[in-house]
Amino acid sequence: MHLRTLLTLLALSAASAQSTLPPQVNARPTMPTVRADVSGQLPDMILTARQVVLYAPALLRPDVAEAVRRALTERGTQVYLITTRTPLFTDNSFTFRILLMNVPTYLTAGIGTPFALIDGRGISGPGVAGPGAAAYTTAAATARLADWVERVTRATQPLDPVQVVKSWVAQKHGLQLR
Picture (cartoon, rainbow, N blue to C red):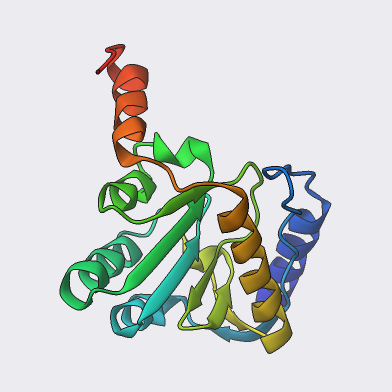
């Protein structure tokens, strides 16, 4: 019962947040989920996937980051990351590290519930990117997430890792790299 209340509050807060995304992109809709926590299985799902799309405003799970690294290097898995600007420069976020693995990374201005599309199957909830639960989304919700991902990736270009490193060095150390 407590988990259901928490998920309802998260859905309501995500729906009421006024976030702006790049032009031509609407805010990501709140997704209903099937209520089985799969956050503990997420790293294994990533390791066996052919394609992973990860929307993580801040990736705080080292096991998910390691699964992404291994899927890329050991299996050649296609991985795409959608995030916001702040976590790229946050010390406890693994977002910057994933970008440096040459993962196509797209920025949005809005913050919503983290989700993953793993071989076309949707998983949504705080447990995708940090502590908390994550559950499979319904087929209709997964289709809406896939549509949102397509609109975001068409509306913006992936970040250039070299430019992001230059920005990071300037922000952290006050140095301008050429």
